[in-house]
Amino acid sequence: MINEQKIPCPICQGQIPFDPMSLLQGVGFACPTCAAVVSIAPESIDISKSAMNAYRELKLTNAKK
Ligand SMILES: [Zn+2]
Image (tube, rainbow, N blue to C red; front, side):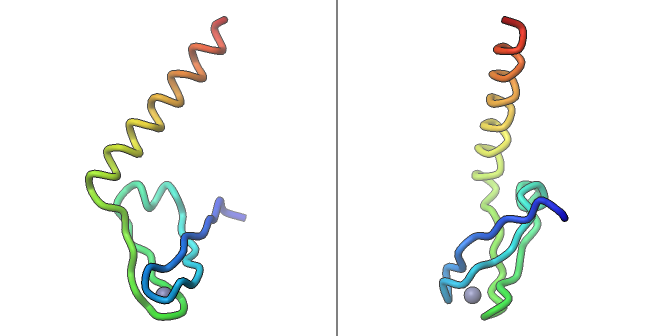
């Protein structure tokens, strides 16, 4: 079982299964209902990576204490 999550389709409001790691790498995912392809915006990729790094650093900081 892969770590699959779902996002709402902006076109038909259906559920689109996606892999968060692939999405962060710019991979698009097609809606199974209307075939619309959704992908994360480049600026959002940077934000997501920064957020993930910040979270990782936060965890490491907490682990040292
Ligand atoms: Zn759709």
